[in-house]
Amino acid sequence: MENKRIDSTTHRPNGERLLYAPLVQMNINKFIKQLKNEEAWKKEKHNTITIYKSDSVTIVLRGMHKKNTRKPSRVNGDATVQVLKGKIKIHVDGSFIQLKKGQMLGITSDTLHSVEAVRDSFYLLTVIGK
Image (cartoon, rainbow, N blue to C red):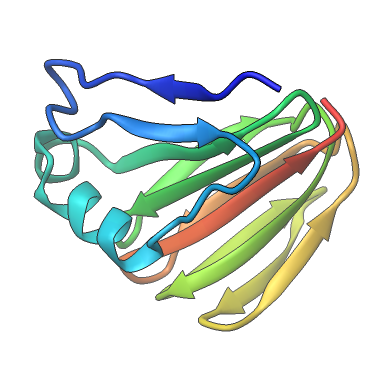
């Protein structure tokens, strides 16, 4: 098994981190603080960081500002969405499910959906079996 790291970039100067190894510790509160301190959070509708990536699982932490919506998209595998802070709505086929801190949702592969932030929110998107 080869460890995978990601280096810092101009957009994410504190971005160097381990993405894949036998053990990868993830400090979610530290990542949320990092996202909030980056220019993308201050200027854009959302900010995202990949915190784990293997051949079969990807975990992404996404922060969204209140009243913003991500355009409809599909996930490349089955996925879960777990709200860490705030409240979001997941829209599918003209209806929605609202999730708040501590709640989680499973989404099947290729389900067209969009995410709306009811409040400033942070959630984990875990994609399985890409």
